[in-house]
Length: 140
Image 1 (cartoon, rainbow, N blue to C red):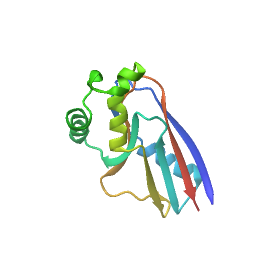
Image 2: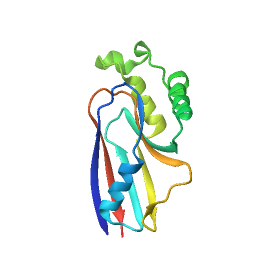
Image 3: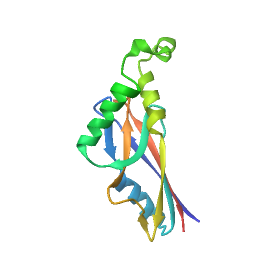
Image 4: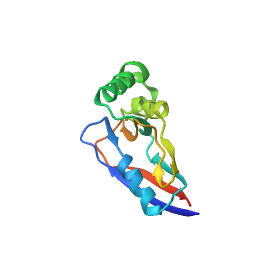
């Protein structure tokens, strides 16, 4: 089995951002030279996510609004984590749990086997400092 590992580093300008990483995942697959297998993309931080969805700015806004209004509003006084640690990012931890921290993308005939509108995204929920994603391609 062939394997290849890459690391992506993000230092977002905003606290929350969604970044398309599909091309970087494909570069990892190509570097491994696999034709059949998979690529794992995993956020290495507990306040970030990796997910698959549509690359459409209105949907991104909907996702950010849903996280803010329904899942975990950014209200630092609301969360025990914040009072116990002195941090203000409990909402980011809850958003990461909700969206998920990793995806596995199949590789078939030398290509990422994604649906017609699917792209791979890094979701930053507590940014403005360096954070990483690990990419691991595996297969033959």
